[in-house]
Length: 310
Image 1: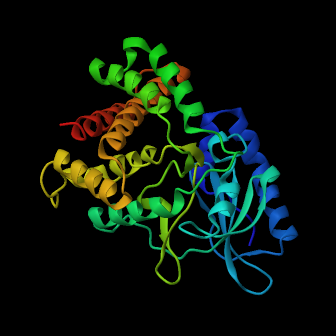
Image 2: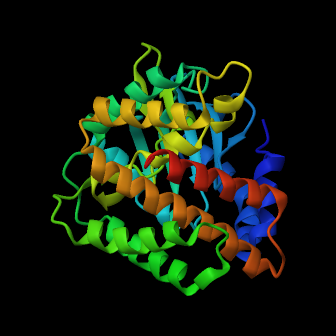
């Protein structure tokens, strides 16, 4: 089966020349890895935002997933290191890695993910994973502080161009440094733990995938579980208001994860306002106004920020 690059991944050429060069190299790179590691692709190519995933079997017929990541993505630089550190406890097991080529051979997880699970149940699953994943961090990992300090500086530089209530922007700019200044023993933070990044293995155990690992405060984690799957909070089957649903999720995560409610809330505020700022930065870099989808995303960021504090 020839290696094909999914259309959704090819669309990332629009993000810049570095993406284009990587995508040009990718078919040959993937074919080389298949050959060198004695693997055979057995199903259609899959992809994430910045990675190609090939369902494979090895020479003995054992299934696996060959993942090749975009070499310009700093946040996933130490994905293999984190997976090795977790050792299959709470996260997919790493079989083999080539850090230079951003290649990982992972256990095959048949799924499903948490996308169709009742939201509270899904939050309880993820909260339980926090306790397994948040182990003492390795020295090689970049820190949450190193990222957040830079992101807050960029947010501040936007001034009043962020279409978010000014009190929330000022709140994030104040809370961020305070959170980073507090002494918290650094743990391995997944960074992007949400419904689609938790899959079931053959035995039905829930395991995390696709970490953006950092060393830092475990209370940094909950925000992605709030901003994903928000559309169902206002649909025909919604229970209560959007605010009610977001608060229901937040408290389920805090309780299941044994987190400090106030500290987790502050991190949600910081992360959501930063998200809104990135949408503005993306539009600026492209020399255009905000797209409707970006305006909708900022509205979502404001809704989450408001809900966890009301």
